[in-house]
Image (tube, rainbow, N blue to C red; front, side, top):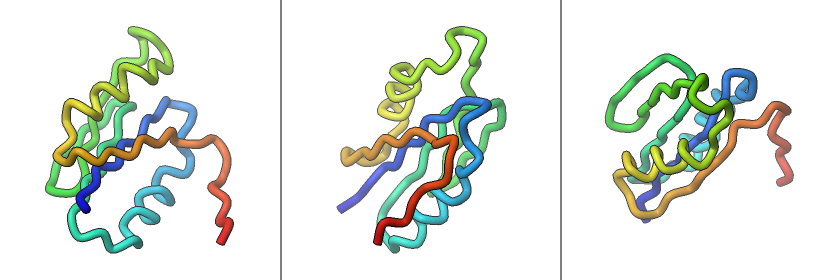
Amino acid sequence: MNFTFGIVTTPSSCEYLQQIVDSIESENIPNYQIIIVGGNKSHNDDILQIIPFDESIHPGWVSKKKNVITKHAKYENIVYRACPKSPILDLQ
């Protein structure tokens, strides 16, 4: 299966973004894409796309950010994820 992983961020929410990206990459999924929406930096390559979002329009506008992820998704299987303010627990 092919997956797009969409990560919604806010300026104060994403201390653990790298952990999330590393976790996705460690799954060894053959075809995947990661889209991060939020902040003011942009990046675009075959795997990772970072889309800036102007928080002054509506701070923390999660539904709009999810729509942006859907619009830019390469694959129809989309996993939406908010970036947490606390560490991700490994429950394995």
